[in-house]
Structure formats: C-alpha cells, structure tokens
Amino acid sequence: MNKNLRETSHEIIEVFDAPDSEGDQVYSFKTDELTALCPFDFGGPDYYVLTLRYTPTDDCIESKSLKKYIQSFRDTEISAESLGAKMFNTIQKTVEPKKLYVRLEQARRGGVEETVEIGDVSLRPNS
Image (cartoon, rainbow, N blue to C red; front, top):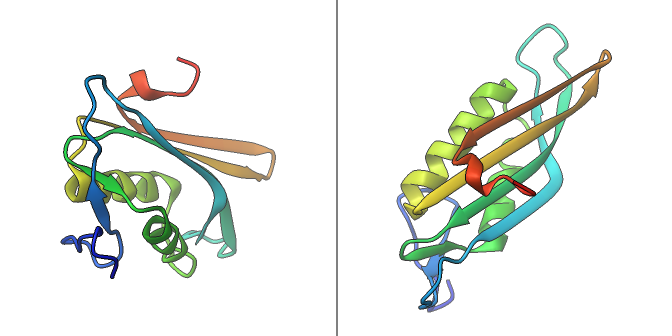
C-alpha cells in the first residue's frame, strides 16, 4: 500500500488525508461501470450510472479502491434501493464526510427507468 494511503474498516476502500483548504471542497466521481444482478425474476444484470459527491472532513476516497468496490457488486443480487443504501452507508462510515450524495441511475428495462438518490441533495449536480 502507498505510504499516503490508509486502510479503513472497509475491506476495499482506502483513504488519504484531505488537503487543507479555507473553503469547502466537493469531490465527485461518476461512472457507468457499476453492475449488479437483479434479485427478482429477471435474474440478469442491472446496469447503473453512479454519481458520488462528497465534502470531506479529514479523509478522501482513493479512486482505484473505489473502482474495486464498485466492481465487487458485479455478482451480487441486490435491488437498486438496497445498493444505493449500502453504498451510502459504507462511504459514510469509511470517510465520515461533512456531506454525502449518492445517485444511481438504472438503465432502462421494460420501458422503465429508475433513479435512487440518497443523502444531501444540495450536492446534486446542477442544483
């Protein structure tokens, strides 16, 4: 592990010290590489666009470890609602940010789009 990274209570996500700043910083991650298995009759993969935004307190999320965390759901049967809640809770416990916002946009299936938003909506992009 890089000497600037620290292990956390989470098995995958690593953190590093947030830089000092007089103003609030907002960090954003966005990816369309999040997939999980539908827990219902469909049984196939669900595809998501994940938006993660946070204002750090002391720690920042290391991006490579976040990617591994995102990939860890690939073979997990989980609903969009549960996935959003799990990701929010894990990141909240790991980084303890001042503000946190998680958005999952599930790819359209059967003509229906689903979006799950959890956290501080003041961090919603374009809000």
